[in-house]
Each structure stands twice: as C-alpha cells, then as structure tokens.
Length: 121
Image (cartoon, rainbow, N blue to C red; front, top):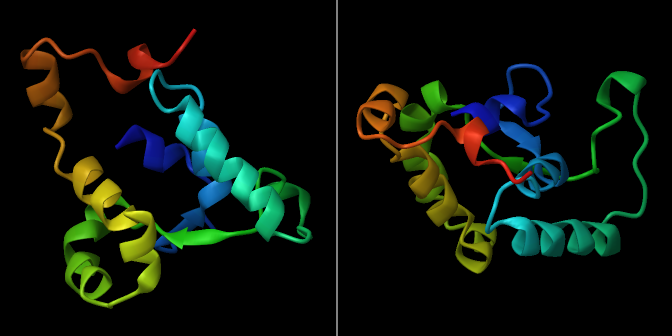
C-alpha cells in the first residue's frame, strides 16, 4: 500500500500522523473534500506542534495505522478494542477497505491504474 508507506510514522510504530495522511489524500480525485475536513478539524484540535526538523510534516495527532504487513496481526485487537474513535470516525472501515484491495499484480492484470497514476493533476 503505497500511501501508507508515504505517511509519516515514527520508527516502526503502528501509528501514523493523521494530518500527513490527510495531506497526502488531498492529491487524489474524490478525496480532497474529506481530507480538507480532516485538516481543518486538526487545526481546531491541535494547540501546537513541537518537534525536530526530521518530522516537519507532523501535524500533531497520530492514529493507529498499521502497515500492510502488520495489519493481520494487529487487526483483531484493534477492531475489537471498542474505541469510540473507530465507531465515530469509521476509521476501521477505511482500514478494512484499504487492506482488502487486490494485490498490485492483480490490479495491473485487471487493467487498474497504479495508485500513483490516479493522483490528481
């Protein structure tokens, strides 16, 4: 999953910066509006961000966002955690949709353009 690889994470953690993910999503057709909504909500929720220059793309709020290879091992505990965040934001549905996509080879053989080719101009 290319977009997850590009999203700012801290070390080998299963969390990623939700603002950076939303910023990356603004480059995809059909996602601009929702991604902008997330960025605006972050502006209201986060009082300030302090960090080192290595993390200058950080927006100050992380979310559980396992990498593809961690997803199956993390899925059950995360999905059954009962977190209101999952229920209220539908983040769990986003993860399910992202990680249930066909593998890259299957998409290419079906004639689907790679993720990079779908980015808005």
